[in-house]
Image (cartoon, rainbow, N blue to C red):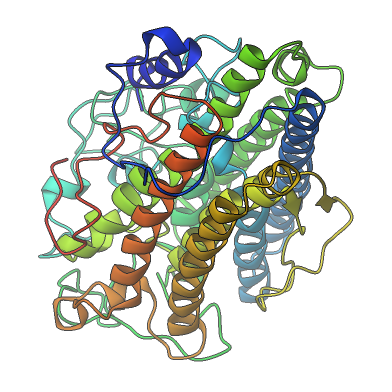
Length: 476
């Protein structure tokens, strides 16, 4: 998302007298509830809890990224299949807390901004996707991975692409190289972040015959085996291959950058940090509403534009495996769950921790938060009708992402299988969840109106998808 769009949304919520032109496509229901009586003390509790959740989730993100860093070092020192699998598991675990932080985006928080005003944050080098995998290492082209998806139109790496890529060239692999990530307008030069490591560990998700013609023939998974789906990069890429050492150099450089940047983002949420101080300090109703608007913009825009649209409908409507969020590891079912859970965390004022055993249960709870959320604020204000409507919306979304997760974990149908033409229908859990997220964003917009925020907390420009119709194509 570019700065003009972020600033437009936040500007439209900053001053009530100037908000008439900031209309929302997710029109609130005028009969839901009366306006919510403002309470400064309770508003401060909502903001403090929101900041506590962000700090906790980013703390866990740093911890799990450091564990991934260690697993990669172990794999390099002893490049066995066991250690490759352990590195993959460490990557999957690292995604569990990070996915829950994505709701802090779209509000010029530390992930999107260094100074609470400029759109110069680190998200693009931490979690940008789709990846420019052809610029990093070898790829196979086919009907499902055409040059329109794997080609790199512009980059600043010094690599003689397409004759060379980073791995098979002589370009120096270091932090300076990785700073060139996502500098091209189309972002086809993404070479850093979680997904760069994912690609190096799994490789492309091809057919078992190594064909890239996967539109009608995609690999299913086996219940309980989290590593048998996705790409099948051979261990020999890290042992016998002439570029094995460069692959380790690249992964280690990306992991070092990832950990450092996650720490920088986390530190912006610490109790003595200037961003957190500015965010949690309010003295009147106007300031409180502005901060509420920032939280709700993250919740509403992630729900509809980013998750339902960019991360789900683009892939679903076009049967595009390349546009699947974690397309190399087949972990997209968890991306969907965790992004949606992050939104509900912000509403309920809770963070349960993360799942370190990848069995679907949060077992790492040291950073857990059980604070004061919007649900408590509405309850104390007596806004029972709106509160009930929000619970219904979040519950419907939860049913959807649990169904998607069950398809992948239990029934052997990861997201790339669910989006195939033969499976694409109105009953598909992806379609159902896209609609639920669309409806959820509309109720979040109603919450904003009830709180006296007349602006649009669901950015109409966040995606080119009509998420009320999941099978319709998106304008990218």
